[in-house]
Length: 208
Ligand SMILES: [Mg+2]
Image (cartoon, rainbow, N blue to C red; front, side):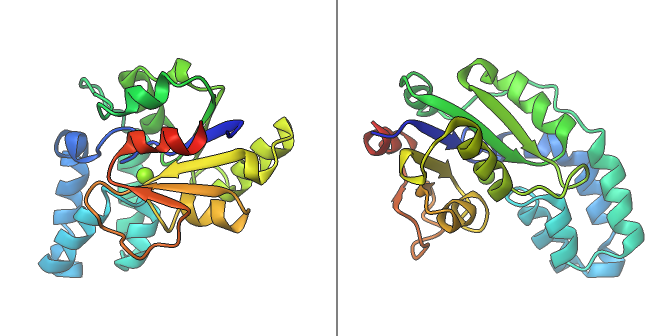
């Protein structure tokens, strides 16, 4: 049995696709306006990627100009979500399982907090950390290390649950922490993970 689990938020506790149309409409309009600069095919790819990756990484990958990058940052840093949100049904199985839980999520501070509040999950966690590249150079790996140091956890006493092999999964692996990749659409069949499943609730058997 593990002593604690660390969860990612976006696409792990709830599907970003459920809010992206409303949330991103203003940001997508802005990305659409870059069609002259990027080409319309790249614009569509960038919009799809924004549902899975931090904006800064998307802007970098698709070579947004400095002016475009900053305009997007201005839009996003004050954005909050305000419509009702629902976690994945299976998240309930995780939240009801008695084990210490931490939430570590990358994104804009205001936006991530608005989602946490709307999902009603704040009380599920011993601590919540937002990794906001606009505010700090700290990474998920830094936060995982801090959680271990502050609570005297050994790597083998923890499990990281997330959807992104390049983000929390990679950071956890580098620290020798077991990983559970939630991969409902089978997007990452060859990913280097300890456990992987299409079903979030399968994680319970791993940490209990
Ligand atoms: Mg995620």
